[in-house]
Image (tube, rainbow over all chains, first blue to last red; front, side, top):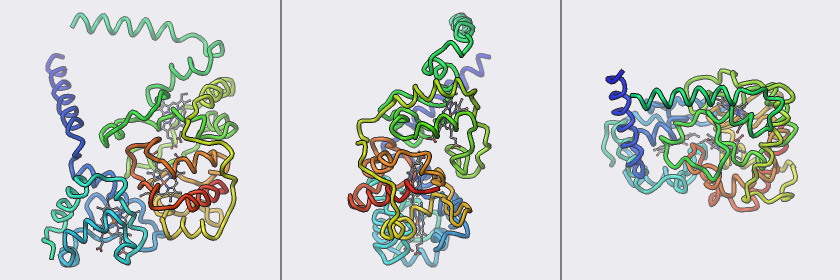
Length: 120
Length: 217
């Protein structure tokens, strides 16, 4: 019983700790919450929204040769201003008024991990 | 440890006390007993982080009286059909269609209670349901609402699955609330996986889009 209590307390502490620093939420948590619905948890572009009605496939973020053609500034721009800002599909929404600058920065780094590539 | 035992027995006593027959109780009392485990009704929004949103077991209802149409609410509570294609807060599991069902009497009492929960963000009588080519274009192409929301196309659900289905919005949602939600989503949901369209769409577009969604069968 007491061991269980301690385990629970530890877990709670961990969760609270995570929430406490949530002003700059973990990039993976941010990605999974906002982006995975279309790009998929694994980044391959097959999220739950991508049905036969979905006109343009979300970019496969693990495609290193494609993603290496984008600079970090390109990624920042499309995340903030959406697909149309770079003449791509509006199915890629603008997230600039939803995410903080830090969250966008975290996402750029996270995408670089997914593609295992550097920007041009 | 002893404290725990005391707490548990007080809890048990409380449970016995509140388990009075519900026909005698008002909607708020029934709600407290059966619904607060998953829904909160005291605004403003409590969830400020992704973790806090993900910890919720059901949607917040503190602005229910501004959001829903009364007739829809009373009948849905007796016969709750899935609204979100997916389980709440999940991007993988399907909605299990297991929402608690209420008797007609309890549903009416709770409906009265919930319809009293208004938000001052919502101005009445601004949006009249109406279709327009402009709104249809924003919905399908410009803002891709359909990328995340289902609606009926030729009688069949079509569109994305991460958002609540908008099929039946004409009976379910208050048109004025839809507009308030697009114009100032942060007031209702500081943390949600829908983008904030308050500045991306101008006021006229927000109004025509709300009027359009309010026609969805």
